[in-house]
Length: 282
Image 1: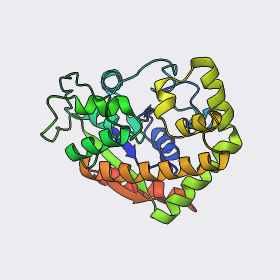
Image 2 (image 1 turned 120 degrees about the horizontal axis):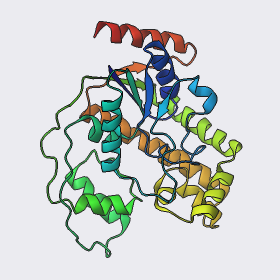
Image 3 (image 1 turned 45 degrees about the vertical axis):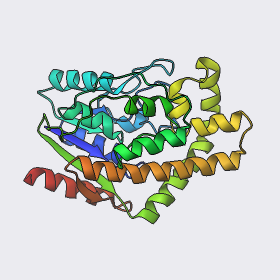
Image 4 (image 1 turned 135 degrees about the vertical axis):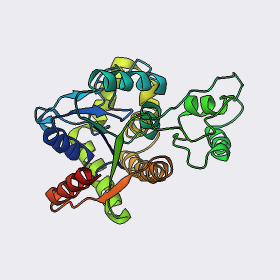
């Protein structure tokens, strides 16, 4: 059985993935673009060793920040795991929708042309992309991905077919509560040493692509360069995370058959039991 857990940051995906993996004697597989990378821990809210509770975790910490890792790479790696662990229950967890879509669906990559977009700003490129797909899940500052998207000659115009028997579980909460969770989580990241983490990564790898495009890292880089204050940096991360959460909801609702559950933060066991009962009856 394959269970795919999706949703925005802070709604309990990590905890649920471990609980389900223990219940079903399964393995947890990462579907978050930042958690692929070693040393990107605080800013990616990566699962901690003590949180794994003895459960095997795959596709976490497999690349250095200096290494490129594409959606096509993820598709291959995930399918290799699905084949290797086909006799095990797999709990796929994360918020990177394109990773999940590419890995689980008949998602084919388009041919790429080379067109010069150097005269366009990131905002202009982003608007061009939105004309193609109003549910676009690419960050406005990720210029490389925006240009690649516009350079695709053929698009996946037909809805990709799901290749595996997957149960999609989504965790959610009220918008105001989610925004409060995001704000508190960002504050916690700074207390845990996010600025030092980014500074160490910059000294070791330089301003590599993953640091320039990942929320939480790109904003701290601007602070370390003296372009914004620490307070502005914190608020910018909160704002960008909120916007990303909204895009995630839109993406998953439009792209995948997700069964959503409201997270009970006061009694997570109740949420877990509701999901177990659903999985048993479907």
